[in-house]
Amino acid sequence: MIPYGKQWVDKKDRQAVVAALQGDWLTQGPTVKKFEERMARYCAIPFALAVSSGTAALHLAYLGAGISAGDEVITTPLTFAATSNALLYIDAKPVFADINPDTLTIDPKQIERKLTKKTKAIAVVDFAGHPCDYRQIMAFAKRHNLLVIADGAHALGSEYNGARVGSIADVTTFSFHPVKIITTGEGGMLVTKDRAIYERAALLRHHGMIKKPRQGGWYYEIHEPGFNYRVTDLQCALGLSQLKKLPAFIKKRRAIVAIYNKAFENIPELITPPEQPWAVSAWHLYVIQLRLEGLRCNRRVIFDELQRKGICRQQAGERGVSRFGDESRLEKRRDSHPAASSRPRLPRHGQVHGRPRLLDAGLRRKSEIHAVVEAGLRLPRRRRDLALWAH
Ligand SMILES: Cc1ncc(COP(=O)(O)O)c(C=O)c1O
Image (cartoon, rainbow, N blue to C red):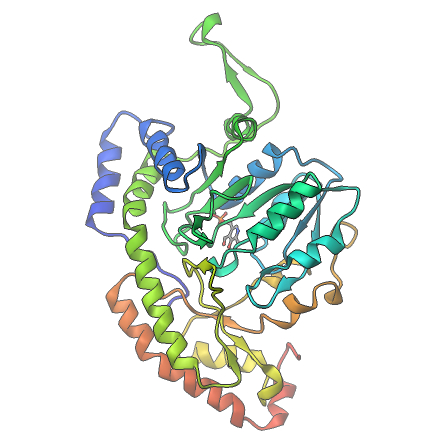
């Protein structure tokens, strides 16, 4: 089975973790600080805070930005659930604005339609690695005194008009889960240019605890109920080592994308993923869209067939986000974001990166993906009835 995603961890990574293990600190030591400094430098931004996951980074970003119960945050339906889950943790309301099909990211024009007196911020996602249209979004946010929080979990190393994701929004978060572009096992990072956001997030990462050395090295106060969102030195040692390889990882992903684009260019039922001229995507995902109206089956049949052929695939995120949870807290109507709900009828299977063995296997399978789609074209119409998800 070709996995949906697989980390690339080499001897140098392992040596870095062993060296950290031999040091005096297992957690919250010098390696955490060093990883934060390197990430801040990479993103060309003053502050970086390493935390236990991308979800924790989002939670702290929202809290650091002062979002609280009852506030509305305009966000995208095409993402993983964590982007809006972390808003629900604090009883804020995610308000979904549709995506722009040309970027698969939030459509600036749709944001405007969702603005109310309760809107406090915009939470964008650089979906699949493609940066959103930051110029328009930042200008709109400035006009309306809103903060922009970017969920950059897919986009470490992506660029918008030459600026790295991480350097543009008021706060950006990253994830280092093994399927992401670099990994720390589990882990995340919040980066910001705003000292106040950073300081509040840092306070909440460690239980809301403030030390007061003047009153004694042993003295601390808990100012509010914070969390344990700390990350270990072992994880950050891996992160530091992985960060060195990031340019090579992105280069390899881009090479694979070029091969896939070529392979799929003449299948009218497939739409290959976009990359605007102003964008450089780090290509966390390679998202294929199916023109279902041209197929004689629905996506369930295609998904199952890919699985049968040993190609692990995933649907894109919209189903998991905007149609869960409490009706009163979430906008759930399908027609509230038609582009997002009509787009992602797709397997995403782009996580073939790094390891040459895996790469070769992935490329061999591209012809099988062709075969599956072509089989979809030939299937008798009654096969539609078998599917659980009819479109
Ligand atoms: C867009 C997006 N945001 C946030 C997350 C959450 O990251 P983590 O798994 O590190 O909590 C993910 C994870 O898949 C993601 O895809």
